[in-house]
Every structure is written in C-alpha cells, then in structure tokens.
Image (cartoon, rainbow, N blue to C red):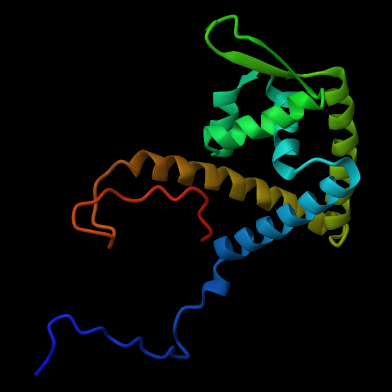
Length: 189
C-alpha cells in the first residue's frame, strides 16, 4: 500500500547533468563576491571603513545630495541598515546632513571636507587594486576584455529591466499555486 504523501528520494547525479559551475552568470557572481570580500578586508584595514560605508561615500561623491531613502534603494538595504551606516559616517564627521529643500520632511546627505579626503584616498587604493587585477592581461587582451565587458554590462542592464518589468506578472513559481514570482534581491545565476 502506497502512502499518498510519501517523500521521494533524490536521484543520484548523472554525468550528463548540467553543472552550475559552467554558467557564466554563476562564475561572475562568484567573482563579484570574491572581489567584494577582498575590498571589504582592504578598506577596513587601510581606512577603517566597511564596504557599505565606502559605497555610501562613493555614491555621495558621484551623486550628492542623496536622501537616506535613496541610499536604501540604491543598495537594496532596509531603512535600519542604511540608517546605521549613515549614522556611523555622520558621527565620524564624514557626512553632512541638511533639510531637503524640496521636501522639508526629509534630510539630504553630502560629504564633508573630511569625507572628500577619505574618498580620494580610498579611490586611489581602489584604482591600484583594479590595476593589479587587470595586470594579468596584456595590452590587446585587456582592450578586448574591457570592450566585451562593456557589452555584457549593457546587455545585463537590458535583461534586468525586462525582468523587473515582468516581476509583477503572476505565475506559478513552485512555491504555491498562483503566487507572484519572488523578487530575489541579489541573484547569483
């Protein structure tokens, strides 16, 4: 007699099964995670900042003023994470906060002179790190790689916008009949 809800045993992998490690997107994700961990260790050691603090500093250097909400959206953080990161930078005198001229209920953030000095120091270190990584490619190979990488970035943005547009489309995703597709924050494949 069969039990109606018997658990199936997983089959053993076969030699012709697809291998996740062969996917370009998987390997790119592994590379990105490795680079992030290396950057976090370096910036913590050299400058006493976390990777998220560096990202906020870098974003403000490029796009100031920004509100706390804009920073949260940019890095896909909850408000608490953003608030703690910004509070630490404010306490160290690296950010200046002021009332938003357009919406008096919110604040906007900018780098202070000390924040700009730290930004320039970290950027110099980041450039050295980037150059070290690319040094394994000779001149022509480096040009070809960077051109191809630019094309992949363009295609990745287009694919992201397509996926984002379809994100609200209800479909069965294996999690339950009729549920909307899940919004994975940081896909790895």
